[in-house]
Length: 167
View 1: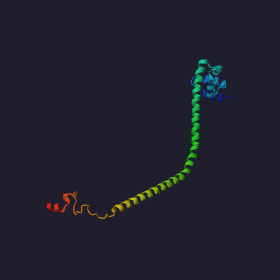
View 2: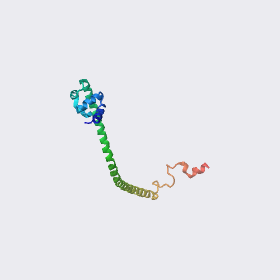
View 3: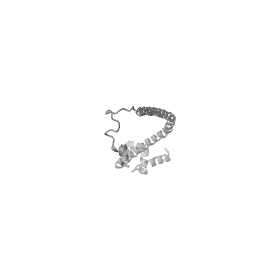
View 4: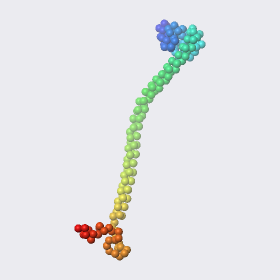
């Protein structure tokens, strides 16, 4: 390995809290050159790589946290890429379906309008028939008493002699 490769790998490991340049070089020498490898190694392998036990525990815990965070970021990025790829296809499919949906909606509206018009015309015909039957003049029937003139229920104010008396 060249010194620039070791240097770049060591600089990636310095992102772990508690890992400086010297510790990073020890980890790279032990072939623990990525954060995920350090997280998977655990404290015992870090001690074998030449790191003190107390520091090894802290570094292992910090590396696990960083590894989880980077994996979550990768998952989110992958999901975003998939969604970005799928979006145009979904939009295209929706655009293809839109005219058919509009046509179906229009035919439903037309059917509903026709049915409503039929109902309304039937109601109008029924009302007209009722009005005709009520409008037919009834034959004048003779009073049962045989009397001609106002009945007992006729108010005085409507009688002609009362009207003349007022004047």
